[in-house]
Length: 545
Image (cartoon, rainbow, N blue to C red; front, side):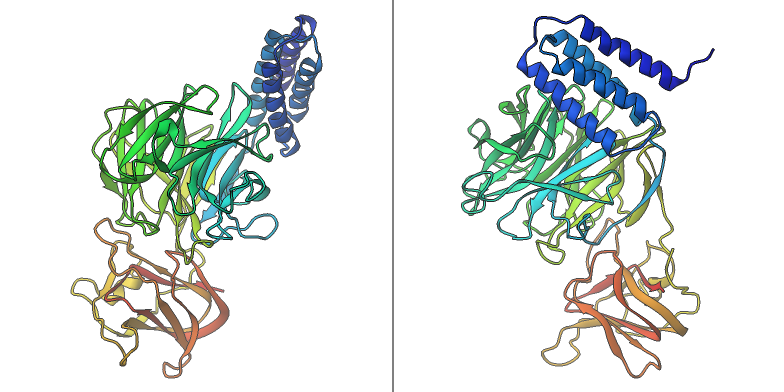
């Protein structure tokens, strides 16, 4: 008789856990009991919030581990055996997760399950089984940031979990004389404890310290463990890195943002043990480290406040030495982002690395956007190309591009009948030629009237009325320049090309993002860039109703 994989797995788990029950010792340590209980909480949440094949087998493994942990006679050996069986059962259950494609669109403010804006800037992530937990700065009260936690299975649909570190509540100074920036989250497998490291700062940035907070459950209320300058060294903009062997690191700008400091942490992840100075004098911040095989890669930015600058890459085979010279990747403003994290999505068929960046001040600090797009690493480089929307399969680890013209109005009959001008070699017709590498550039900056903004514009005759509900103005994304990026804009429409009505305008044109309007129909469209000394654009589209 041939037994199913689930039956065999259940028998194996049962023997391992029951063996632990039968071979009881004289009572184990509190630490090992606490560790197993932490993993049990994770497993229970996994079983409760999922419905994959083999769930009954998985629940039996949880029950057996609970029996071992609850028995006061269980020793450390028995609890360790139960823990290993529970991990094995979790992994086998996770392998039954069906492959589903999820579409992620960049550029708009995320909302959570309550319909509220997701406030998790400078985000940090951990993955527990099939669920990502994200923490970040709550900037709704922009100069009093504390820390929110959200969860998601697909990095698209977000559930609010808890304000895990709260002003006035978690620490008496938080929200008054202290604030938190760039919180990042570890899970320590050995202690079963969740640990947050962050920039723990005074309101005037004079403290230059790191803060550490801990919790026994992922979404619980975290408690303050310690705060101060790690190993006595001034520390600000920061991140963390967990190596494949379980060694944890805290990395931050040190000594007034002059260098980067790589701090190796204690086995419990609570204290810095030693440190290495990286990129001395290069004034780097927003460091994000990833590992592929035996090589480490770091993305970082220059120190330019909230304004974007190029992402730079370095790589090494040894974390503490041998980092290559910095070189730029992407375009000159890192596609209007700054690195927050790099997520490694390992699936049954492939592994995808996702870059997570902050689009600061879009258009203000509380409304800064979180941007996600796939990147890839070669031996000495990183393919860092903006992807406004893409499909990803978290079970298989695959991603695929999507047709960026999907949902857009037909442009086959369009003509530019008027424009403010064009630079030689960069004609205005490039805005609807379907080629992202060709751009329109207009360097005419003459004000329309005394005291008014300089204006560059074009007028499109679509040839017939177009039913639209918004537009997308795609910026240039070439590596050479970001000159002419449109911020202040106006879109007008007309039925006859004579009488115009403004349908959208603002001081901040979202970067490569759908701009929604009331559903209308028009034949003529006039797009204006206001206040620029030059304007550039790769494509212009109308979103079809």
